[in-house]
Image (cartoon, rainbow, N blue to C red; front, side, top):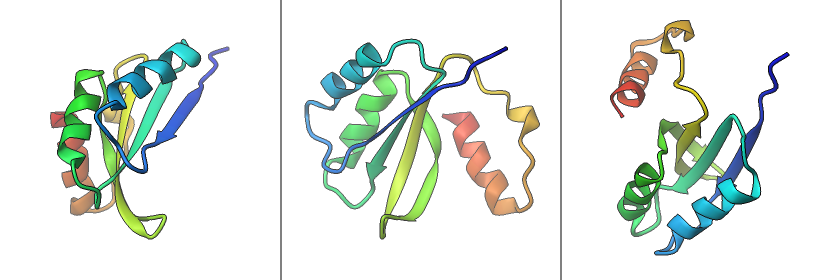
Length: 104
């Protein structure tokens, strides 16, 4: 039986030490299937935070409109490559978002 596990971190104010926090998350919770990072799109320096997460192996997981009353970005890192062929979408907008995720 396959066990799936998830660790989620929300960076309310991502700073220059985000890389250390991501490394600690993986060290404190080893062997998880998915690591998720939620980044606030309204904060200054968000592009640096995205670059930091990408260097750590995270990719675009989706957009979170009005997440806790503000827009956020979901980034994730998975133990194995995602199987995008199983995703069922109902709108062109959803397909556009999936295309961004695949490209990332």
